[in-house]
Amino acid sequence: AEKGTAAAASPNDKWLPLGVFALVRNEHQHPQLIMQLAVNQQGVVRGNYTDEVTDSTRPLHGAVDPKSQRAAWTVGDNRFSVMEAGLNNLTQSEATALIHKNGTTQRWLLVRLSDASQSDASR
Image (cartoon, rainbow, N blue to C red; front, side, top):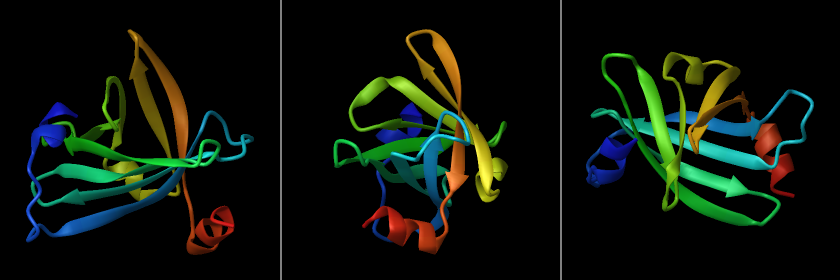
């Protein structure tokens, strides 16, 4: 995650959108945390993290490890919580995300939002 935070993004970079995901603890939870993820050719991850409860959006920064093909990122200025998921898993409709925080790891679920879900969530 630190490599991606420190990496400078050029206006000429080509970005591949990975998708827009709801971040939930389980499939029964109403999504309140939304993430938009993209990766460039150098493996730098960028996007936005929106908390619909507080109506705030923060940038996210990270990178893909070329060996493991795992994407790791942080949100805003918080360097103590790191989220990660397999790059290939981010192409699926659902993916497990690991959140490392204060020496513990939690499993959350990333659920891909369709265009219809995105417009519903913004109402």
